[in-house]
Length: 277
Ligand SMILES: [Zn+2]
Image (cartoon, rainbow, N blue to C red; front, side, top):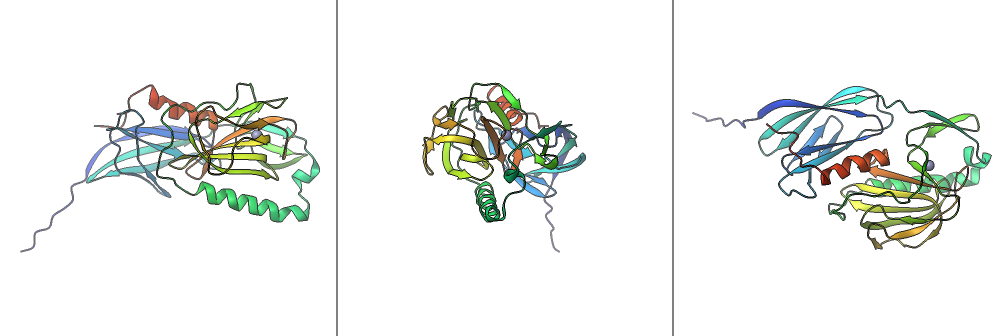
């Protein structure tokens, strides 16, 4: 007689979270183990920065994701828990901008450069560094007012081109730009659209991006600490005037940087244990 051993899956009550398109959901978990399984993505559960027996998962929701209910499963050892993610409409505004026409319809000779820069960035963002370089809350890279929020649908010279993938800070004169958190510099380059660009890898699929810089103080491979000056703001690339554009790529998805920092920084002010029995 054969004895069948069935893996016992304890299915606990579902937990539901609301999150807007373009935002990141951070779910605190009562264990640092396992994986959060979404229909199109598996997300590694990360150890909590303060409580080693707890964990969290970062779920970035793409800007173009329509409102929907996503059923996720947290799988760890022989246990399974349901997590419902309710994607809601973030209702972003529209912005109408005027820029140099060559930055809206690039000349043919620039197309190859633009394609190469895009491919290079995608290669960087899809890399998942298992190590975490930071152990404190993220900070803004500049002490200045916001002139454009993340997510605005953008019309350039009358043509809808894209949405705003980061947040803009006023910087009329060159100002020191500071690393948002500890990490390793993975790109320092003059690019067609983003001008003087620095990208910092913070580990675990989290990258911060600083655009339109006029000067660089770091080079690729440099470790940086939070608050370190990485360069000066400027007016390079596709711009309407001098400012700092600041963004985050999280597990390959461009996310609202201010919201992301607010979410992840709550890990330092409250214990996890939201999803539990
Ligand atoms: Zn911007």
